[in-house]
Amino acid sequence: MRASHKGAHISGAERIVDSAAASSAASTLVRRALTHAKGIPDAISLKITAIQSPLQIKALPVKTIQANSPEEGLSIACCLLRECGISRADEVIDMIRTSPPMRGAMLVDAESLYRLDTNLDRGVRATCMDAAGAQGRLPASAKSHYAEAIVLASKVAAAPGIVAEICISDDPTYVTGYVASPSIGYQRITCMKNAGDPHGGRIFLCRGIANNTAPTIDFLESTPVLVTDVPPAPGLSKTNRFSCLESELSAIRQTSLWREPKTLMPSGATSIATVANRHAAVLASNDYLGLAHDHRLVAAAAEAASSWGTGTGGSRLVTGSLPIHSALEHRLAEFFGCEASLVFATGYMANVGTISAIVGKGDAILSDELNHASIIDGCRLSGAEVFIYRHCDTQDLRRKLSMCSGYRRRLVVSDGVFSMDGDIAPLNAILDICREYDAFSYIDDAHAIGVIGAFGKGTAEYFGCPCADITIGTLSKALGSEGGFVCASRKVVELLVNRARSFIFSTSPSPAALGAAIAALDILESEPNRLSLLRSNVSFFLKSLANYGIAASSPTAIVPIVVGDENRATEISAKLLEQGFFIPAIRYPTVTRGQARLRVAISSAHSEAILASAANAIAKQLNNCYG
Ligand code: WAQ
Ligand code: MG
Image 1 (cartoon, rainbow, N blue to C red):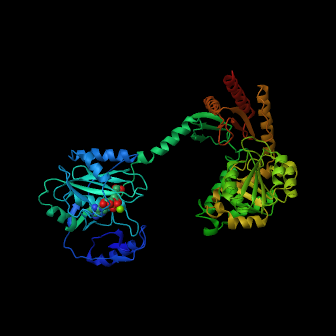
Image 2 (image 1 turned 30 degrees about the horizontal axis):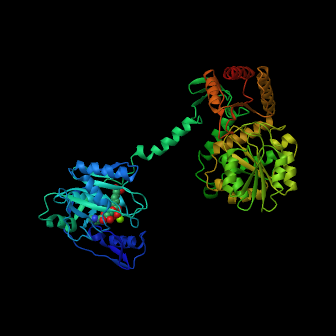
C-alpha cells in the first residue's frame, strides 16, 4: 500500500498473509492509509501480489541501549559499527548525519565507502517482507517503528554481502534508532537525534559485492521474506525507565522529608501494639474512643459481611445501593440532627467530592490556612477561586468574604477540629459571617466527632450553635471504622449523588465498615463515659507535660508538641519508639516547614500509667535535644 497527497508520499506498508486473509489485510492497510498522522491522502495504491512459500528468517536478537543525547547515541553507534568490523565507522556516522532525504537506503561498500546503489535520489528499498504470525504485526493506523524496523533489519542482515546497517528515523518525533548486523543483532539506541529533527536515513554496509550488486539488491527488493520469532516491542530497560524516579527519590531523602510506613502489629487494644518490631504504647491513632478493637464493632462488621458480602462490587449508582448503606445514612442523619446524609468511601473523598460538587468556576471559596489536605485538594479540583484566610481569624475571613459579592456562590470551609493543631474553629462566629454575606458554611468535623460536644456530636454541639450548612465527618476516627460522610440538607445530598465524582466513580464502602460504624454510633450514644474518660485522659496528659515544664494545650484529643526542625522531630520520634512510645513526627507538607511536631493522639483507651510515662519520655527527649 502507498498513500500520497498531490504526488507527495504519506505512508506505505506491506503485509504477507495467507490468501484467505488477503481482503482483511487489504482493508487494514487502507484504513491505515486513511488515518496516518502525516495527513489524508488523495491517492492510495494497493497492489496484491501472489508469492510462493516465502523465505523464513529468524528475527535478530534485540537489545536496547540508553543514550541521553544525540552525541552519546551517535558515538555508541560508531562503536557498534566498529564491532561489526567497519574501520571507518566515524565516516559512516558523518554520512548518515548528512545524507539527503531518500525513500530508500544507501548501499555502501564497507572498505571504500563508495555508494553502490545507482539511483542516488531513491536508494535501495528493502521490501517484500513481513513478520510471521500476529506478534509484531502493524497496528491498523499508527505505525509501530520498532515492529517495522526489526523486520526490515532482520531481512537486510540476511542479504548477501551485507555486514551492518545503521538507521535514524525521519520521523521528527522518533529519536530511537539502531545499528544491526548478523554478528551483533539489532541494537536499539534510544537517542540518535534531537526531537523535532526531521532528518533520518539508512545505510546498508556491504563487502565483496562491488562488482556485482544485483543478487543483493534483488534479495532486498524482491525476495519474499517472513521474519519469525520477532521479540515483542521492548520498553526501555527498567533501570533506565526508573532512573528519573531515583533522582526524585534521593532528593526527598536528602530533605529529611522521607516517609515510610512502620509495620504495626495490633495487640487487640488501641493503646498497645508492636511497631517496627518493638513493643510500644501507641499515641498515634485517631481511634479516640478505642472502638476499633471493641468486640461489638468486630462482631457487627463480621455480621454485616456475612449478610451483605465483603465487597459492594461498584458504585451505588451502577451496582446498586445496599439497605445497610441507607441504614447507616439514616442513623447518621438522626444522630447529627440533619435532614440527610451520604456515605463516601473515605473522608478524603467526602471532602474532595463535596467541595467540587458544591462550587465551581465563578464561585469563591474562603478556606482556613490550616485546613486538611483533602479540603485543599477539593478546593483546587473545584475550579473555584480560593481565598485563604488566616487560621481561625474571623476578622480576616470577614474582610475577605466582604470582597466576594461578585461571585455566583461563596463557600466558607474550615476544619472543625484542626488535625495537626487540635484547636477548634470558632463555628458560631463563622456562621454569623456566612449569614451576613450569604455564604455556604462547610465544616469538616473528622476530629471533632466522638471527641467534643456533650454527646460527641462535634463542633456545633460544642458551641451550642446550629450545624454548618454542610458537615463532613469520618467513620474512621472516633467511630473506629472506615469511610467518610456528609450531613446536610436533602437538596445538598441529592446534588452530591449527581455531581460528586468521588461518590459517583468510587466503589461504595464495604458492608463490614458500615456495620461497624452503626455499632459505633450505638455505643457512642449509650456509653457517654467514654467521652469523659477521653477528656480526663487529655487533661491528665497535659498536666503531666506541664509538670516537666512543657507547655502544651488542647481542647480536643490531639496534642501537638512543636519541635520545629524536621530532622529533630524525626529523631525524637525514633528515640521515643526505641523507648516504647509510638508518637509520629509530623512534617511538611502536612504542616508548615519549620513547624515539625510530635503529634500525640489521646484515646479513652489509654491508661494514666501509659500517659504519665509517655510524658516523661517526651520530656527527656526534648531536654536532651535542647540541651
Ligand atoms: N528500505 C530501505 N530504506 C528505507 C526503507 C526501506 N524500506 N524505509 C525507509 N528507509 C530509509 C529512508 O531513508 C528513511 O529516511 C530512513 O530509512 C528512516 O526510515 O527499535 O522509522 O521509516 O525503536 O523513518 C527505528 C526503530 C525506526 C528503532 C526507524 O525509519 C526501534 C524508522 P524510517
Ligand atoms: Mg519514517
